[in-house]
Amino acid sequence: MLNFELQNPVKIHFGEGQIAQLRKEVPRDANVLMLYGGGSIKRNGVYEQVKEALGNRNVIEFGGIPANPEYSKLLEALEVIKSENIDFLLAVGGGSVIDGTKFLASAALFKGDTPWDILEKRRPTKVGMPFGTVLTLPATGSEMNSGAVISRKETGQKLGMGGPGLFPKFSILDPTVIRSIPQRQIANGITDAFTHVLEQYMTYPVGADLQDRIAESILNSLIETGPKVLADQTDYKAAANFMWCCTMALNGLIQKGVPSDWAIHAMGHELTALYGIDHARTLAIIAPRHYQHYIDIKEEKLAQYAERVWNITEGSSREKAEKAIEKTEAFFQSLDIPTHLSDYTDQYAGTAEKVRTALEDRGWVALGERQNVKPDDVQVIVEKSY
Ligand code: NZQ
Ligand code: ZN
Image (cartoon, rainbow, N blue to C red):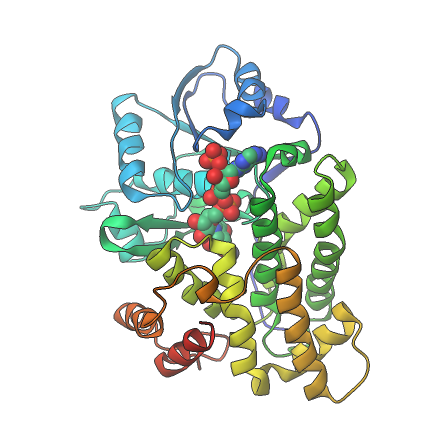
């Protein structure tokens, strides 16, 4: 096992009715900016629950944060934070609203020239404005980690940021919010969480037995519970398991003491920047080809995954690895997630070069757990994903 440091200060309130906990978690004398997305919270009862719990606190609302949170929209919210002396942020939404809020938590206290530097110059945020979250869409794990991804249409960029100052003070996870989520977004959530585990697991063995077993348990649970949530969104047991799987997949725990890959996400973000494809779907497009491309060096973990997650016990280690990749792609497809770029756009010619160039321009020329995902590899993987 590799050496590691672990600190995750996020307080979780999990369960039905827990939105009421805002009453005790949001400071009484705070000037609160409540951030939300396109309005789903106004149609599913979440908004009313939040407002009731906040009582007579001083709250200003800022809605309209789009999926793949957009920099220019967030700058409007930053203006409000400054002009209204806001000192506490409350995100009510999915990964996009929470990530947008993390950007604002950082930008509000940022001392440099332009807040875009936080992303472009990869400045880690040591201290941010305090914020809490009410999660409405299980998927990203953003509710219990300190990372965010922000898009900028003007320049066609989608960049990550983070730092120890960007953990939420608290996050409220009420599984009943799942009832109103469109099926497509539930499938996205399952796929995103599944791939988060793979990015931290599908590398090479380092004797981290517990991390492996926890990762495999999350995968097994997602395979079991995902279809149940899709079949019946009012199934509380399935919803609760799905929600906790998504959080556990990216709260830092399974990444400790092990190498991690994250090249699938790096390539995937470029597909979202180019075509606006939902984040999770970009992962389903890239992951199968990425694992095929690196089957030699990932074979041991792929075979272990084949045995422990997919119950593939016959054949050589190589055959098991091959079957595991097929099973993974079939799983995404079973959720109604198409796994080729051409399923999403007719304009895919030249995409591989564009992704290659975007990553190269950023200096990302050695991705993956062994830093061996080079520009040539990126080009081949994306081309094979057409
Ligand atoms: O905007 P509203 O109207 O709320 O509708 C949203 C949105 O259209 C809707 N939705 C959310 N909760 C709902 C609901 N509709 C009905 N009922 C509910 N309860 O779902 C749509 C998608 O929401 P979004 O927040 O964009 O989805 P997701 O949670 O998948 O977030 C995706 C973003 O997170 C980033 C992605 O790159 C992408 O920008 N990620 C963040 C990560 C992190 N911070 O750790 C890691 C991930 O790998 C990922 O990169
Ligand atoms: Zn993801």
